[in-house]
Length: 119
Image 1 (tube, rainbow, N blue to C red):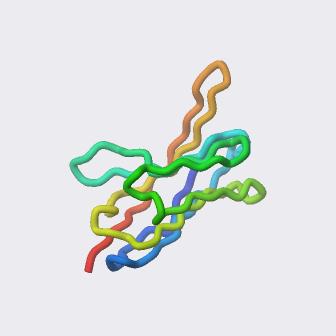
Image 2: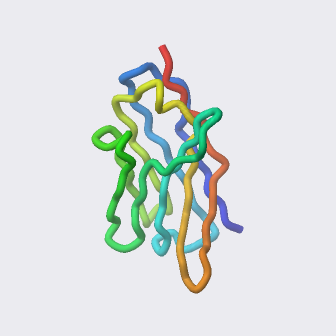
């Protein structure tokens, strides 16, 4: 059974930091590209950052470049998102995503974790 379980969300003041984690099970983690998405109230879900399966290349949305860092530990089947210099506009539910295309697209989602940036 595939599971992606996010943790680490919460309430933080502007300028603060949080580290999100996504524990994966039920599939071969190292073979999948892993991403963080977020969805703010009334807005569409947007891609925040991606770590590819081969080489671990990372990509970021312009809005988080220089502030957020995505990383993965293939030995622990865990994805991370270090978020620094948080802004109120970073407030959203953050989702972990796994994706791999092998003849068919395989994609899995976590349940999400709330991040609220407010004073």
